[in-house]
Image (spheres, rainbow, N blue to C red):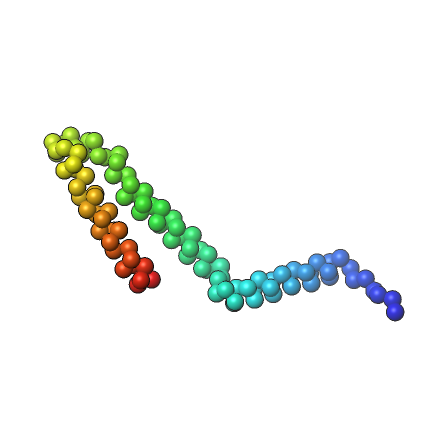
Length: 97
């Protein structure tokens, strides 16, 4: 029996359908959809923004120290206490997630 070749367009369309079907199956299996990816990207951007604001403290450290007339230890006490609180609260936050 002789095999009949299909046109290239039909083969391409079938290939695309099979790729889409496999992608949909993977999305259902893993629970990841396009919306999840956008939420993940937005969360990363927000986290980078927050961490940037927190770590920008060093830029203002010297002017704040001079304006308050305090030493380095007194000026960094609240930053150290905040970092300690974040470190102690991290296991609790991880448990809640």
